[in-house]
Amino acid sequence: MVADQLRPRGILDERLLAAMEDIPRHLFVPARLAPRSYEDCPLQIGEGQTISQPYIVAEMTQALRLSGTEKVLEIGTGSGYQTAILCRLAGEVVTVERIASLLEKARKVLMEPYTENVRFRIGDGTMGVPEEAPFHRIIVTAASPKVPTPLFEQLAEDGIMVIPVGERWEQDLLRVRKEKGRMRKEVLGGCRFVPLIGQFGFHE
Ligand code: SAH
Image (cartoon, rainbow, N blue to C red; front, side, top):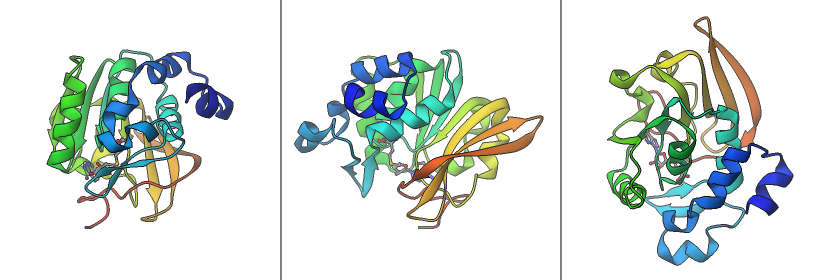
């Protein structure tokens, strides 16, 4: 996966590549899909949701520019695979999922090799987690019609947020920075995520 799908497409962050080499992606998908878990595509994880394609996980994580000390907010825990990578590359992680059954599965896999620097939340991630703010980094792994206001408010000065923004089934992957309180956006490429459902996202 790392040699065929990631390096040739410009993922060069060695800490990230090592994390993706080590973290057993097959544990984060339903057992019947384990044999396909390193393929170059997203896979169904139940409840109509998907685990992102490995390259997308890598592209989003690389765009966050993590050095190892950051406090990160992740919206859309899903399988917990992206969460595992963040835990390895950042200081601490707060992850929010709206579907309880997915959160419970992710919690189980992540607690197996006891991960200490993660806190799980159930709820509408478009509201962020104000009591834990500010966050140095925010990653949203579901598609939003716009950058949710509470998330930008909870981003630290000089912080980075990576989020797919656009239509329900087609979006631009954005890197958003907060510079002197103002939003600076950069388009990283096109993408397709399941919708972010919530007050500042899409409606059900
Ligand atoms: N990073 C995950 C992606 C899962 S798909 C992975 O690779 O496994 C996106 C997830 O976002 C789904 O699990 C979906 O339930 C969740 N989601 C959608 N809207 C949300 C919201 N408002 N708050 C929290 N999670 C949300």
